Image (cartoon, rainbow, N blue to C red):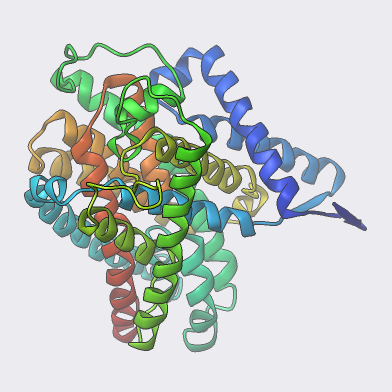
Length: 420
């Protein structure tokens, strides 16, 4: 830790340590506060937002600025999505075929509507039209990374001099809404329609637990053999498989970049994980190493990486940046939330069959259309912890949100900029 004036710099190692502490705080809050359990708020969200609020109080009370080293967070994201790929099977993909197409089409509809709504409301409010695009797919579906990448172009070519500040604030506001709304949406749909996971009585909620329940509810984190003990050999084997996928994913990312298309590292790693898990022979282990898929070791790594990533993302939110949101910007953000909610309830849920799987996907849809794919996964995990497993949801949604979204956004943003 380094203190320079009123600015405190927290190094990456300590940031990870604090994220683990935040997870324990979130678990304690969810165990003690029934409302958080009732509305399936993920533990990293409970703890992360509380810590972010405390940091905000320090900022306003003592003028303290805190910056966190976030290099480890990016690696955690890559680790998590690689485990998702390792646990996917072509059979699951075939079973989710129609739902995958429907969700992709509805996501495209929402992305077009987000940008049109943002541009329209910006013009109506007397703001530059490009500002509305910033508060559309750039910051909401795109998140902080896309905002940082595109902000210079908005500033230089569109004249939005504070593009970075507007985009970061909008992305932060969207992340909070995404984290807080997914669970309540799924809970509402499940109770209203009397839905249940296979083998679970309708609207009967499970006793709230963390690790084990999460793995039962999330097939991307499926434990595989019940009661199996995780030994050091199994754990290292899972780490080895993940690292192999990351190495190959990095190579694939470079090849894709050479074609003129940029994808975040976790996307090619997800693809490599799917391909290797489905194409490698599993009959015989190599040097006593058996390629892992849906094993307790992978489940543990996924659980830790997702929880720590989301805790780091939320505990570092700078609430004071939201105070500077002008009235018209806040109006656009509220309108975007209502748009996502309406499409979710009126189109996503019914067109996916109105089933329990559709309700879980609705929680995830709220997560990635307003925040990020990890938020979507955390929302769905929290729901399945309480109501039961949904294998289909954890196959369909990541493919749309983690793979197709970045490709679509890379096309839509310049298209809309050209139309302004």
